[in-house]
Length: 607
Image (cartoon, rainbow, N blue to C red):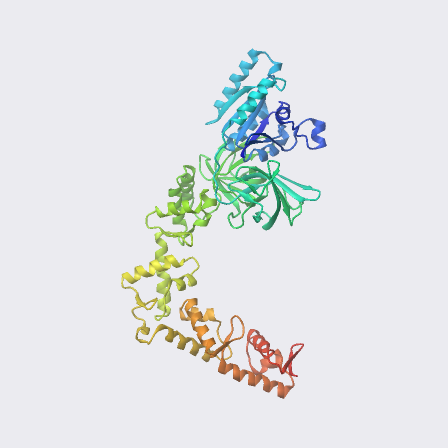
């Protein structure tokens, strides 16, 4: 089924709710307060179906004091149904709703001139001119005007036919979902239920949900899309989610539900701003992002006040090109697009170039500037949040940049300067240890920013330049003295065993040993497994391997202490062997494995 989301907006008492009631029988008054006052206080949701097409209506409040609720409903809609009363014409909230819709990127409007039965034709013509003048003030807005009276069946049918003829707007599917909660409530027998519009992906009843603000995983008990139970809800649909493992008191409007690991939160975002009212640098405003409402500081980055940093008191989990609104207590100040949802360390001049590229959607140019800032590599997994593109598209763009090395497996793009950094790491290793056995795994082990794929490319480059030589599977310095030995494995076998032997009762942990010898963990683990299988060393804990010869002597000493002193605990053990507690405790635990030893509240005695 094809789903459309239409936001019904307009000034108070211009007939929005009555119009929806005539279309589908839904009056929208869900609270006693709404019924008594005859206005929509919060968002009302209903739908209208014809064949395989479903229209979901979001009836937003028209009262000026409830604009914050209107904004929450306007995010995620496909078309705006702007209702203007023929007898009153354009009013303050008509303009306010149009401004907000424009800033949110809603470009297609159905303008309903309501209550046409109450006015003469001459006034209708005047209203049409006023509406045309109003829309001419907003770039790229399109509208279709219909004269409607709820008492004229023909005009209602014409409106229905127009609505059902609207094409579904294409939404980008990033492969993961985003969902701003616009309502939270509880149902008897079901528990916590939230509603919202599904953006950027599909949602399955089997999916794990991540609440970004709570940093908590949630499970789905049931999904409803446009009033019907479903196993999967599609991108752009209105969805109610029945959640388990959480109370409705813990969630609130504006919380973002998504897939874990895809979005990071920052207390600052960088934006492109369009102003309707004057805004001073460092002024405070109310930020509306999705269904979220919070305060922020507006910090302009250029003299034209085109670009700004919005600094909030809470983390903002935004995405490139996401729309936002800025208001004070009385009016809409402006709004625009999020350009940089992830704050990067840049000089101001570099940042302005970056934001200009993003403003023009020059993603290749933005990539090049980011690479200059990320000298140790740019993670492409963040491309979905940074640029609103899937990872495969990010890989394509990165590959077009000269001298950029792209690791497809690790999803990292490296600038040319990163090669120099890796070569410096290699130089430092060889200066400390001319016999170091270099490998891609070792370099990645030494520095977390180095992906093995990139490390191997740099090592092969140095090999081609005769800066390094090859010894079996390793890269070595030409000054390496191991090339005359029987083989690398025998060298490692002898070196590791001798090192452990000389350390006696205080053997170094394997990973620390590998680091001191400048060998990768896989090679080191191979030798440890061989020594263990030959019973030349024994593993007593995850990080403690001791030579069998030393362990035999140690057991003799421990038993001798029990014979002479009647027991062995950590205190008298330490008087005989001045070792750290981690060694003493491990050896005492090993002693417990013998059948003739009893552990009596920390004292080891013979049974």
